[in-house]
Length: 191
Image (tube, rainbow, N blue to C red):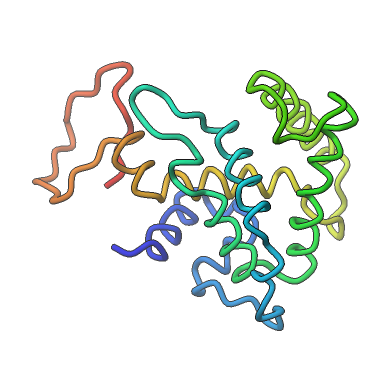
């Protein structure tokens, strides 16, 4: 199974709740997109997005985190290839908004924060997203941090790191066993 098929299946499993899920199913072809939008992302932006992803899904002794899964690169590709132009602009502007929120709260940029401060900032932004969704009108754009969080989860759990380290992975599926024992704390299946 290739990455595009995996993303399509994740979108189906999540009931299309991911922003732009219809694009996953149609092969990620947003009409009239700037063909070179990916060029807007610098290596610094990718590193920044990797750190956001690492804060959301940190490395553990058992599995790599968002940075190991290269979620920043995944975000760049998905935003450039799958999002409508308006959503692309919201997402890209969100990088600076997140960094500015860091400066406002901690007097330094996100990349210079400790892990605890990063977590506190993203938790605050997540609360802001919840409040935004309560009052959001249909024509309002999706909150930039909501996009980052959704792409982090999708990118991570469809990556090799996410599938083989965070989830249980069986390269060659065996027979179907509808009564397989599940013990509390077992990993979910990736295949």
